[in-house]
Image (cartoon, rainbow, N blue to C red; front, side, top):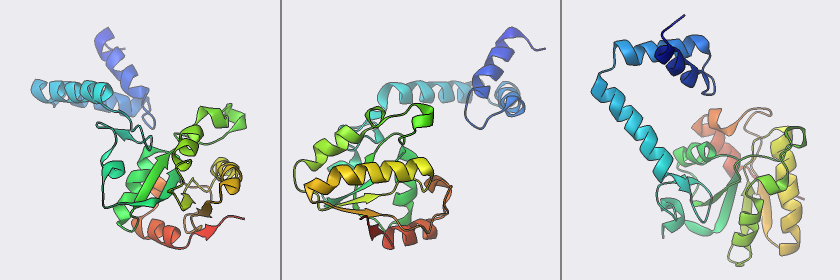
Length: 199
């Protein structure tokens, strides 16, 4: 239907999550018709730079362009508490509330036998290494309140029980079946404040 170069551009955008064929066409034609060549080049350069310079923080596994990341290297954070989340965007959602001052650990997924994701496929080993220092007194399980998120929280809680670390779970102010990134700041704040210890 379109010239091969345009078709390729549309196909590239259509690979992005939440972008269907129609949206991909709109984005492609916006870039070609409206965006200046300078702005298009800046966008392409920014994507390329991000892919080259962003990696996992050596401590918390969050995405960062410096390692350790600003949160892990801050002297103002409470280093006795770690909040475990599934994805980097969950860190951003919790940080927006301004109500949490501890550290994080990003798993980069959740255990899901159906999707063939085992505990070895996410960053659980890295969490256990961090906890072996004995400085952490509490781990908050802030995985999503889904079947996979809950199963992951329970699995980690069982691993930590022999270590004598207090394990809490965020309160279910976040609707079951939804993702943390879509919850508003007040809901996330209440969920953090209302966390309970896992038995």
